[in-house]
Image (cartoon, rainbow, N blue to C red; front, side):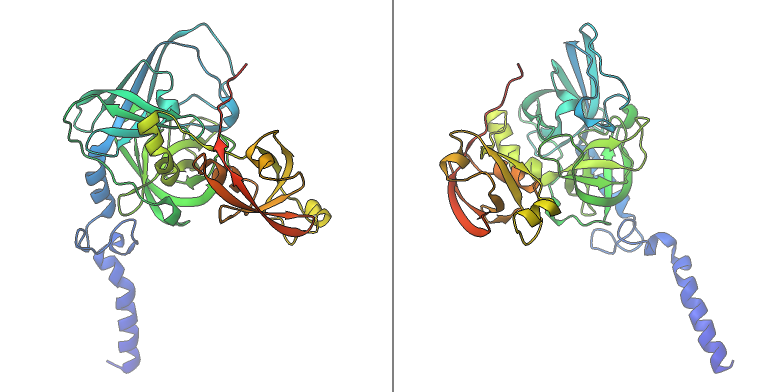
Length: 375
């Protein structure tokens, strides 16, 4: 055997090596990883499904009388669990209503996170576990602004399986994820995909910052967990982009850190108390950047200030450009409302602004945001 032939034979053997072990063994962390819990050759997705499916629940809600709802402000971004995004808004006579969705247990006591639109207005809430045991649940608290609801299984001395909450700040575009839910009533369906993008604003509320994924999400997946490859929850599946009401490969999950930030409020008060600054802001365009002689288009331009608001009392003026809030850089206009909302009312924060081309620091005491009731 010549030396050239030996080299060629060795290279050919290396090329065939993945096939001899099976493509799944070399397909990356989405399919197989070598760990103590998962030796080489085992399927990681199978392991995640086995561990976390028992803590995922099928949520059914029933209202005695419920007016049918239109699509609201979401347009084509329809929460998976509602009707087609092209259904015209209408208000027929009240009728009994039923809703279905998904949730996941977060502690042994049986607290469950789901979407607010899954249980909103419900008189009766029931959850079904993978073992087909059904339990009655009660609403503990809800937050329509983020579409998060906390419910609890009505059972004393319960010891339920639960899923650990991960860190959505560490999510990377392109990483593999697993979604578990009940699409079209098909209980405990497991789908996989990748994180397509982060920080998506789809116009569903003031605190939009969705994780976009191509994992298959359909009506009934609402409120279900989006899991990383450790099996930790990184998001709550909330909305889909679809013309037909079914999956087209574009789904949106609420970052789990946003739910964690309001979890204590939901448990203790049943609602969320947010901070209020009292300003109207607008995005800084290249034209405004040139007009205000700014170094970049970062920040939020103050276009108006509410009378006797924290901003007014703290010395803020129209035309100020907010560049940092409580130490956090305001990269865009959308960043500011989320940062203000996260501040505990009564706290004093330092707000950095640019006024007439010069930097200035203001001390502002944040007040609670008052919920406006529709006329």
